[in-house]
Length: 142
Image (cartoon, rainbow, N blue to C red; front, side, top):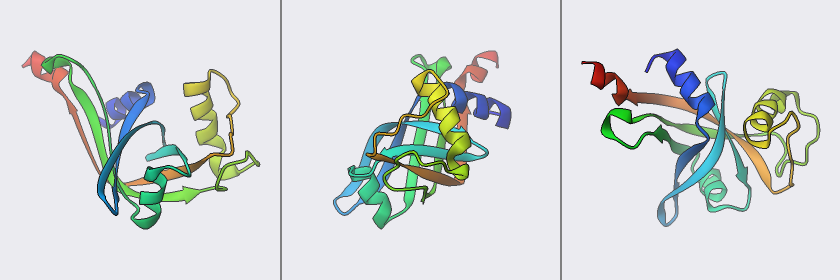
């Protein structure tokens, strides 16, 4: 994918799969996400295995993909590390660093402009070390 195709794909898709490394080995879970300014943002429950794993080892692997038939398959794989941004858990106090991602997330998943804060989640920002993409739809044109 081109950078523009990748950015549009990540804007359109709704679920990613997050892989972490815990004391008992790998752990993979689905999660909603936001893509903004070259960072993947995850709104994670702070009492989840994923959160615990990432506090011990911030390395992460994330895959977003779609398609059923071979010539429909496309996706993005991101490996990198996470950092916590904002209050933990998030209560919704104004935070300039989170304003843009919370507006994007609210529009994408909540159907409006207001972010819902349940005081169980907090933000993780994924800093990509490597991004790989594929789009097998392009193979059909060969």
